[in-house]
Image (cartoon, rainbow, N blue to C red; front, side, top):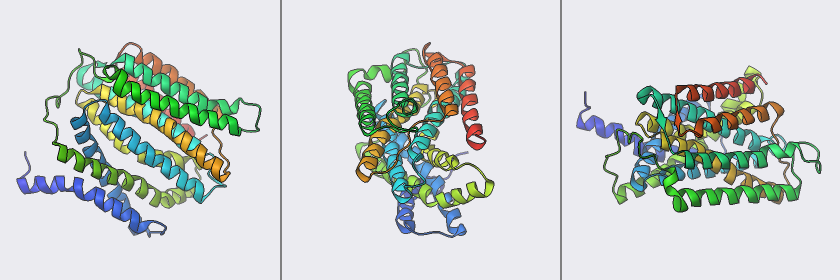
Length: 366
């Protein structure tokens, strides 16, 4: 049953009000310690801002087409995530030496296993097989493997410094390599081989393939509101971080849960957008969002935190723990088998979700 016109306007008005309200609350609550009642209100606005971000990202994607829409959302979220990591590093430099590592690894597990796993399962429930372009998706996976091993695995096997850390020359190399790989990936994805990241010719175009794209003015407004929503999501996530920290301490959980919680909140817009795309038969968009967010997360965050740590002489631990290296190796292996045929079944999606569940279990009980 369709909503009355007035109800539809109210329903869609939240997509405009929520980003502005979230941004205003971030400014109002910055540097303050809200009460429990206020934190509950901030959590509600946070959810609304996430939904608004998904809505405006999809409008922009319809306007610019794939893969540009996926890149816009991935870069926007990652830039703000990197800013959040830097802010937390500066606020508590003694206790956040491994924050960047934990947040980046959490983003990898959430995107490559959680987002992709759910997207494949949803797509296969609808059509039996999820068809995507193996050339572009495989290139994105190769970029993920290169970035994660160079930045998060190698620190454990170097001998010039004690512990899971890089020396200054090694850190400069990792930062430069990450940035260069990301820039080349974006160039290949959007210019040189854009067709590699588009759905294959035999793929189901989806229910909204023939929807009229928004006008240029609507796209500009959506871009502004998307920016406000993303800032609001990350800012409100930071504002509610004390609640998360107290909950983690009360439950006796490891501090890694804080980084994972923040990563989950920051990636909510991309997660919802990817699942909604797969439900509409656009599994290639889901892969572009999931893999693109990881390439952006590593390729932009590593150089950012490296520069900040070198300028301010902050300790930075990037090397993963042994169990995390095992999970990363399993993730890359299973992902390669998933991507190679260019088609996936419910089994591949289930395997990715099993790995993601393992990640969550070992975060809670290392």
